[in-house]
Figure 1 (cartoon, rainbow, N blue to C red):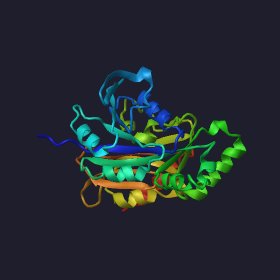
Figure 2 (spheres, one colour):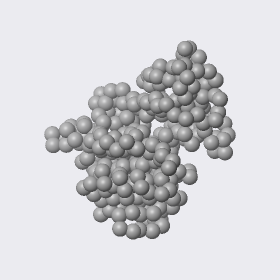
Figure 3 (cartoon, rainbow, N blue to C red):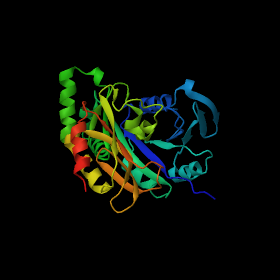
Length: 305
């Protein structure tokens, strides 16, 4: 029996009204052929737009494009075990926390099941309300802990603020969550790769050029034609000065391993994997501060042993 591949998981958190529902619907609409599974706490306030729903059966909703939405209620672990039996298996799992939930607690639970791996924690913040709520004596602890758990913070609804107010809110956030990348969004609209990984950018049918633009984001593909130290590579690419929010790809290591490498915000991982059939390594880098510094990234790659 062939073992099932590891399933990447993105935990989506944020306080009530931050835009988690909007983000999930954006991802489902633009899944680009990926089979997404969505776990929500309760179907009472269904987060899926009605026109995306194909059918509904108890706690499973079938969504356009082969995606599914499931409710986990009070038993996340049971829902994860049930999802693991799904055939065909999804390509990526999204877990939406409740508005007062702590995303890192969800992530810790997920990692108790070997087949699941945390791809990243994305926390949304409402640009209009996050500062007031973050300074409220009753809400301060929840807001602070949600933000601190993030690999990426999406400052959503920035269009509802004047430029000066938006900049002031961002400065406040940067003081609260030093070194965590902040991505400003309108209607939670970000490139699919920011939330779900960037592996699909390797598809030549979808990627005709090396540079890709989406709002205030830019991606570039880098070929690595020799063995390198993957841990050193990811450590250097995660430097805040480069402004990278996502890195993903495959490299041949100096000690003979073939490794999958990826990062989201501050989090980076290197794991041994099976060769893809390609001789060259390749990584995709995405920045939220265009233009992407391709020269600096190439220099890092070339300087590695």
